[in-house]
Image (cartoon, rainbow, N blue to C red):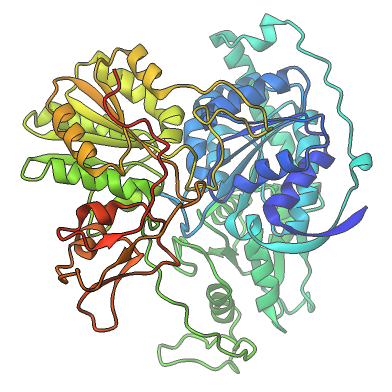
Length: 626
């Protein structure tokens, strides 16, 4: 054993390695990404690791390994679980031979997601057991236990960490590589009666799942991470607090000298019913502190009804805890102060208890305002601007997608009319086009997202004779989540150099006859290409190819000649590049050379050629691609 200061995701990764994981698959998505990346980095040499093209593929790869007796881990964020749900729902009926953990990083807030989804609720829906860690050190230990539970009961299990655990840090003792559990898979044993899902098998296994989950209610009641912290004065205490995850830590830090019984729920499904009965004995009311859904609150309400217990259960459903959003120390402290109030407590003007003040700390300086914006020199800005210029005066819809290019919605570009989920822009553009055939419909998708979920929508568009323009923004990486490789990059997360999957060839194989590739930083050619291609009938595609500025070094910096600048403001007003600012007099443009990447887009737009000095990376194959 040795001690390390680790991020939660790093701790989860090392815990999986210590558990003898044989295969890891997943798709990048904040806040889950670092788990797979850490395993790839700390790989002892006997673990297969891959970035799958999407979460569904990752789930199926992991299932195949678990069928063969391997210990498998699949990683994703909460919205990725939607993509992976198809194989998962059937997999629970089939079961696994080796331990299989489905790591889903939930994002209360949401801080970097489209939705606030609670995987605990999905666990109940899918009938899959779920583990819910409360700290970094516990996550390290709990994922090892999750593999053991999965293997023992022949079922995939969820490991539901949230952003504050994933991205928190803690110093903890971890195993040395020679201490890792060694799992030697037996291999796949053919048995159609077990591995081929027919209705008869599903009916039989459904009954077995219900029986197993009923058993797990008792097993989880004895699980040492589900615990009751006894109150100091048992005879006097009539109030209890039920909590989970990082909220358990907030609760402990906020209780101070208050007398209360606390139940921490580490496995919210199947719910530890016997433990709950022990917790509820003698209480008058319970406050449930959790995020995001009222999972514990509903479970305790059910237990009270089932066993005729006269205990009032409070939480989100009663308005004592905010119904949405991430909980904070302040929220928890205030809710506990109100719940545990007594006659001596100080109350505010609204009659609620004033929460104990936190320790006085020096106030940090105010942070600068940083609105989300495309980076200086981002090729997506050039792509959006070219389409906007080419389509000026025409009735259009610009269907966006999930990624850096969602930021195309911001002024002054204003080029993202819709954004739903990964790949959905392609389908939405088709739907609008079928209803409004006079609208020029564009769908923007990144190169990584094209492989993840864009191909299906493109096939649908071609087959159903849609009239739309697909814009693939190819910056040769998965930029938003940290520059992970994908099938178009020619390398894997394990460092293998492989044949690139050509987006052009994929599109032509689908049946598209108009597929053109252009460097978006060649402004005139880009505008001409968009005008010409958009007028073609049917489904056509433009691939704007230029590398992300984070992975390509600039060759020069642009600068403004103040003698030539006429102060028209076009470069600032139309591009919104954070490198272009006003000079000290507020009249003429100036370029912040510490931010500029020399992309030359502003140079090409300046009506008086007052900007020069940039040197864009000539990495794209410009011009028509036949």
